[in-house]
Length: 140
Image (cartoon, rainbow, N blue to C red; front, top):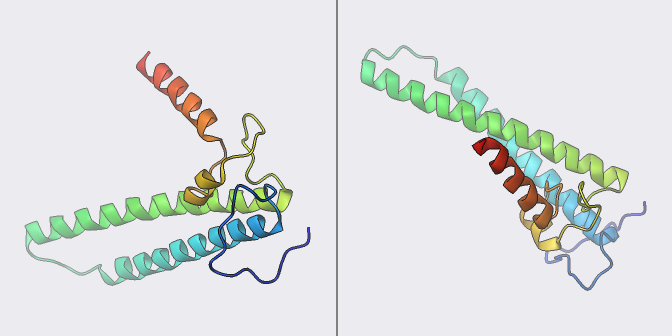
């Protein structure tokens, strides 16, 4: 697949363009790569903070507070790790030419949805149906 080498920062995918044309694909690829890089930088900072933070705090309340902060930070980093995995999956879909299409219906996912959540694998309608079914089964 041929990709354009220059994409101005002001470019935004538009509904009046052919869906998933080279410019749109490159726009989303860059958006995903930038998001992944940002998450990885944050992860490195967390690791450094956790390694530096192994000090002995005599006050029980201060120690409990620090342990709570560390637990929260680890949960946040775990979410980021899962998000990086989803970003990698989206990048694979781009390489395979499947990005932007609903995994349930095969229909295009709206550009607004992809711009807001480029890791989306379902159209809004399919996602809502999925969540309703999940809620029904959870309530059983």
